Length: 216
Image (cartoon, rainbow, N blue to C red; front, side, top):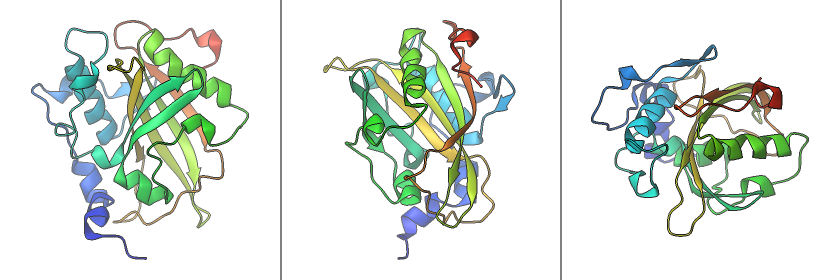
């Protein structure tokens, strides 16, 4: 099936390279490299938005999450809330992500998709984002139905609870490199994506002890 024109546009290499966020300040003040990991342009823009959105607070309030400010990278955004100790529900699953995976995971529990060997470590890693608070960059190798392997960057940051009292997370998923002009691959959701790198972003409150094994 042919994707709608608006989806094709946001899946283009040109679009992703030029996508920005609407902020009052200058994104150049936000570092682009953490523990040797270079953020993608979209990841860097997203982090700059988060830093501005939190103001003087440790993390942004839920009402600081502005779809308007994030509109150019919104197709690559996932917004989640903890509904239990091991239950993380997708509130928003961007259109580009849904197109690349073939599934709209809005309303789905991330950790309810199935058990896998590193599940508990992944849960601990994401829970640490509110405990410190801090951010995390992960690079995962995701496999396509065409046999391809694709390194994708996942930047995830904490958001304060809203009226429901549930802590929230917001993040981007983008390919580290896009070889083709338009992304046409379908990524497999039935295989655990291999974690290549995981590094924390110190937002001024420290990061987890390396001895805990959450970074690699």
